[in-house]
Amino acid sequence: MNGKQREELFRRLRELNPHPTTELEFASPFQLLVAVILSAQATDVGVNKATRSLFRDAGTPAQMHALGEEGLKRYISSIGLFNTKAKNVIATCALLLERHGGEVPADREALEALPGVGRKTANVVLNTAFGQPTMAVDTHIFRVSNRTGLAPGATPLAVEQALLKRVPAEYLHDAHHWLILHGRYVCTARKPACPACVIRDLCEYRNKTPAE
Image (tube, rainbow, N blue to C red; front, side, top):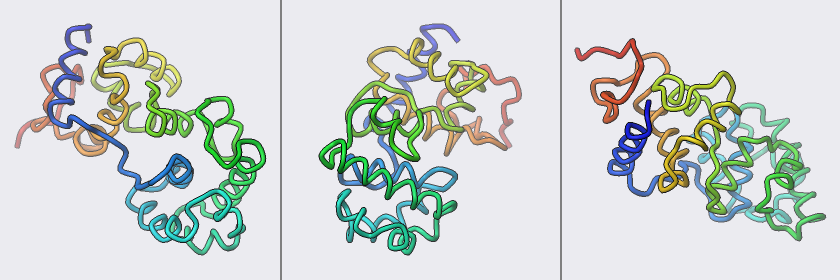
């Protein structure tokens, strides 16, 4: 896929959805951070269902830390891996209070030092909460980038680096949201909706789903 095709790809995605954002529900950088930690191997719908009551009752690091692991588990027990996630979230709350005055740092190194926070989670927080042009490569973005020829790569990091180089600057801030949503609802894993896809003529995927 050449530069003009990449430009056209994002122009169409922006036209379809001018103001994309995460489907996770949050009201602060801290709540976004917790929601993203909880979303690992879980759906956004499932996370939102759990965090509505959690954030209502404990929406700050101090309030959530006061719950303790067992208290937090009662809110998130419907989410996969909730035991490990509860441990990580409570430990993260402690570090935010101890090192950062209860605020979420807008710095990759500081974010990745928090329990349960890897590169992808840090990228989501940096992009969505702080407006930084990062690229959080999840399974959807990895699939779309390779399948379309937009930014092929053998690993999530390779795809991230390729996207940062190839996505036109004016689209970079919102690109990760467009690609996630495209992978979640159109360019799905088993049977992509190629006939309804707005970028199908730009896509290099050889086994496009035929119209029925």
